[in-house]
Amino acid sequence: MTGLSTSAVHGDDGLVPGGAVAPPIVQSVTFSADSDEQFTAIATETRGSAFYTRYGNPNHAQVAAVVAELEGAQTGLVTASGMGAISTIALALLCAGDHVVVQRSTYGGTTSLVTGLLSRFGVSYTQVDQTDTEAFARAIREKTRLVLVETPSNPLLELTDLSAVAELAHAAGALVVVDNTFATPVNQRPMALGADLVWHSGTKFLGGHSDVSAGVVVGSAELVERVWQTAIVTGATLGPVDAWLLLRGIRTLPLRVERHNANALALARALEEHPAVARVRYPGLPSHPQHALAQRQMTGFGGVLSVDLRAGRAGAAALLDGLRLAKRAASLGSVSTLVVHPRSMWAGIVDAEQLAATGIGDGLVRVSTGIEDTADLVDDFLAAADKATG
Ligand SMILES: *Cc1c(COP(=O)(O)O)cnc(C)c1O
Image 1 (cartoon, protein in one colour):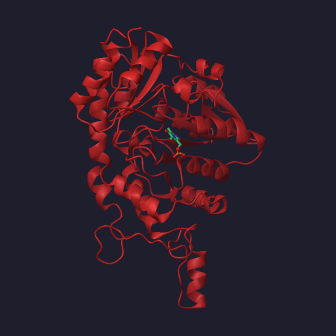
Image 2 (image 1 turned 30 degrees about the horizontal axis):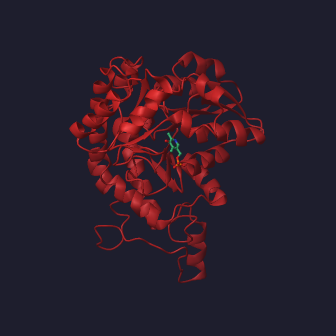
Image 3 (image 1 turned 90 degrees about the vertical axis):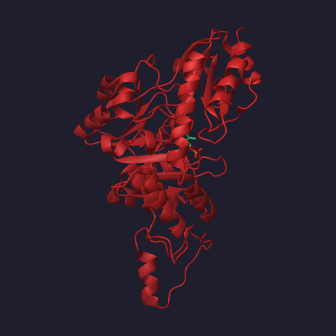
C-alpha cells in the first residue's frame, strides 16, 4: 500500500486510456459496440464505463478508484452531489418498516432526508446524541438497518466514537454509514474503524476549490453494487466535466488538507485566547471535551472550527463584518476561508427550537479555513475579533 499523496496521484493508473498523463474528459453519453454480442455485453456489465453515462463513464471510474484507494475501500461510485450520495444509499438499502439511527446533530440535508422523506415511506428513526455511545446502544433495535454517522459534525464539531458504534451496530445486524466530508481520508479513515459505507460531499474538501458539486460513495463491491443499482434509477449522475474537476481537486487533497489542518489549529489557538470569544470548538484543542477520542481516531483535526462569541448575535455579526480575507458564504473545504453564522443560514430551513436544542447558539460562527498563509488568517481574525467584544 502506498501513501495517501501517491494514491491521490496514481489511484487511477490503468484506468486512463492511451498515454495521456492528465485523463481526457469523455464528454459522451453513449458508447458504440461492434456487434450485437458486444452491445449486450456492455449493456449488462455491472458498473461498466462504456455503455451509457448514467450507468458509468471513464471519468467516473477514475475518480471513484482514487477515493476508494484513499479511504481503504474495495470500490466506489460518484454522484452529482453529496445529497445524491446519501439519498441513493438510503433508497438502496432501506425498505418500509425498517428503522434508522441518526445523530441529532448532522448535516441539515441528512436530517431532512431521514425525518422527512424516508419517514413518508414508512422508515422510522431515532435521533441520538453522538457524543454518548450508550445512546446508540439504546436506540438500535431489531429493525435497525442503518446507523448514520457524521464525525466531526456540522457545525458543533462533536465526535462519534466510530469503532464503538460500528461494534454495536454490527452486533445488531445493522450497517454503519459514515459521512466523512469534514475529516477527509487524510485525517480519518472510517473503513478501518468498521464502517460499511463511507460517503462524501465531493463539493467540499475533495473538490476543494468551490467549483464543482459532487458526491462519492465507497465500500465493499457488494454494497456499492447495490447502491449503483439504485443510482441508475434515481439518476443523480455526475457530469464527466465535473468528475474530471473533482479528480483534478483530489490530486492535491493531502497537500491542501495539511494546510487546512495547520490553519484551523492556529486560528483555534489564537481565538481561544481572545476576550471576545467564549469558546472555540475544535477537536485539536485540549479543551475539546472529546480531544482524547480525536487523538485516537483522527490523524489530523480538520479545517473547520466553530467559535462562540461572548456578545452573542451582535458579536458574531461584528466578527463577520470585520473580516477582510474570509468570505461570508455557505459551504466549506475551499481554498478560500469561508465563514457563516449558522443560525442565519438555517433560519428558514430548520426551526429555531431544533437549532437551539442541538446547541447552535446565536453567537456561533463556523469557520472553514482555506489554504491562505497562516499568519495572514490569524491577523484577519484577531483584528475582526477586536471589534466583536460587544
Ligand atoms: C455539504 C455537505 C453535505 C451535502 O453535500 P452536497 O454536495 O451539498 O449535496 C453532506 N454532508 C456534509 C457534512 C456537508 O458538509
